[in-house]
Image (cartoon, rainbow, N blue to C red):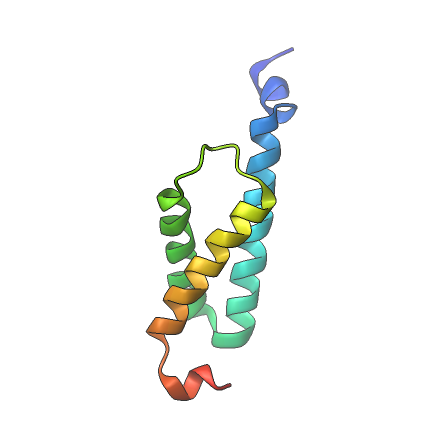
Amino acid sequence: MNFQEQFRNSPCADQIRIAERELSAFIRAVTQLFGPEEANLSAEDWLDESELMDRPPRSTGREWRAVSVAASVRLAKRLPAAQQRR
C-alpha cells in the first residue's frame, strides 16, 4: 500500500473531508447571501478560526461547525447594520 492509499484510508483524511465540506457549505452560503467578495473574506476568517481552535487536529464535525459560527460572528461585525437586516 503506498502513502496516498494509506492517507486516503486514515482517520485524518476523514476529518479533512469533514472540514472541507463545512468550509464549502459556509462559503456557498455567504456567497449567496452577501456576494463573492464577502465570501473570500469569510473564507479567510474561517481558516483563521480553524487555527485558533484549541482542539487536537482530529476534530469532530460539530467542532468544525463551531469554526463556521465563529467566522459568521466576524462576518456580522464586518457588515453594515442595513445589510445585516437582509
